[in-house]
Image (tube, rainbow, N blue to C red; front, side, top):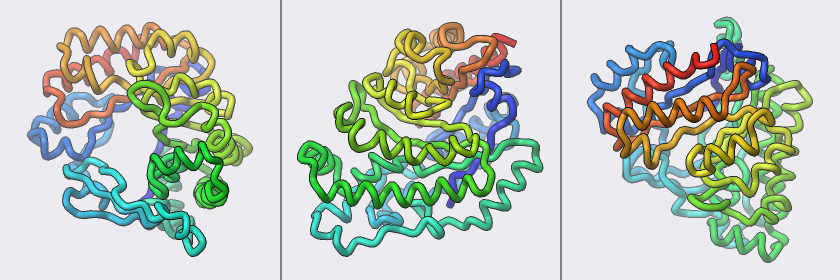
Length: 349
């Protein structure tokens, strides 16, 4: 399984502030939705929103780590479990919970795996060629959770924070191991000529970051900069994602060389995002999934999207928007979201 995808020239222009034709908008449907909602209803919504869904959207096959009741061991030896088909679960067994295991630990090979599963670079090369033939731009990606989270998967979250606080000597060796693997993935994508590299990672909680800003700057930020360096040297766009409240880390992320930053709207605050990031970096806005879109009315949803476009966008570009649909959102709200994203995508056109 690989994480290769594509973007359009319009998206590239939005990221580069080169006056895109419209605001790039993405509506992502979590695989669990296909058994929580009537499939006919989802397909009807998809077919009636061609800007969001230019291609058909069949019910996706589940990744092995998205299958309820079936523990999955990834390429690093971390055991995952989930309770709902389609929802990525959590790591329940950490192979390096005991530092004594580090001496004999063998990391995966980026020639054969991407962190979560096996990978075939010949297939990816053909996929990238097909993307180019279709007139789009190829995008490579590290696994979600490629650095800080991968360290937590290997050690356990609390142990990792103690390691940072104690400046444990084993942590440096483990960071180097994780970074070397990810750098191998990045370099392979760069060699295949991708136009953008994605670096997805969650660093925030509901309030505040998951690690102290000082520890982020000491242990994680240098890894990000080294992983992003080959992409920047090759002229690739650099896209960074993090869920949660990352306000205390944003400046460090931006100066690390990020072109587009995907962050959540209401958790960080739309006004705060406008004041700190507008015209400084392309804002790839992750639309609320906790309050307005789940419990609000269609009118409130429309007002939310309109306000975000007005505060964060402009004719020069610098704004993208994405919504991730998960089970529990009323279908009338799903329709309202799709309508609003298509309506306001052309707000500055």
